[in-house]
Length: 348
Ligand SMILES: [Zn+2]
Ligand SMILES: [Zn+2]
Image (tube, rainbow, N blue to C red; front, side, top):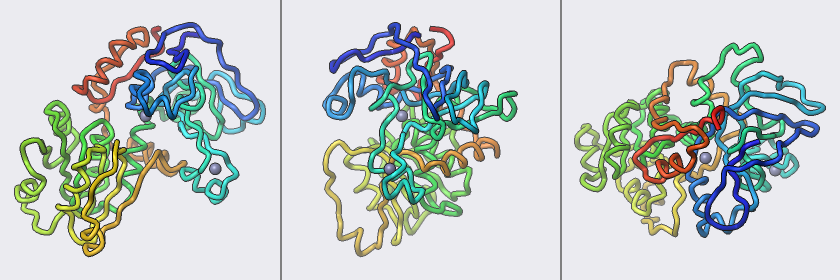
């Protein structure tokens, strides 16, 4: 099969021939139709300090995908050949305390598809049945657009973060208008927030945000979050903030604009420690919550339910490339003047 392969612990990827994986007991083999390109994949391609410390090469990267089931191993009961599926990229141990309690997203021995084990930048990928999310039955009913299916992983990050705190009637601040921030904005609107304000410094992404139902897309290189409050007639501060940028100024900015008792869900990974006014966290009784991955599988149920009930995130996919043009696709994703970039594996 054709695969985008990282042959050694050094920069670059190559589109090459790799042995087709086969499924063992409890596993499902999937013909990949589409993959999303994620920040993680850019780190792996560039082989920066994070990739060198966290990724096991040789490896086929890629963890955001949609495909069709072509084979199932012994003992697989609920996933059938022909089904359109995506995959949860965190393969959990099943036996640690959190796994046994049903809190699988908190597993202490998570193995990452396309990070610790071969991933989906290939014509075929194999996953445990428990990690497969079925979009449609084998007859194709209740399906989803494969492009959207390919971004269920980051969509799940957005949904998990947005649903961390009740948003009905609340004023929500989202810092960072990358693909996940954009989808989180659409989710916040869909589930009944009052005001949704998103910040970024990229004019392209702020423009895109306006198609996701935000009340205000704020360029924080020019305007302050306090100005947004003023323009919307807010007087007490935001109720909930979703930090999706990892930028060192985002969290201090959030704290300065939060109502007492405000809640913050943090998905953006800061590259270094951040200086914070902890006194304010204490006296304003702020809640901070870290978010990683998706809840298995409540987040997935919510995603499918939201799409079915009219949530439209399709505008977040701005570029599509055949897998053979992966270099252009990676360059586009790296450039930042894009939403989500999707690779088509039906034409390699
Ligand atoms: Zn990802
Ligand atoms: Zn576990």
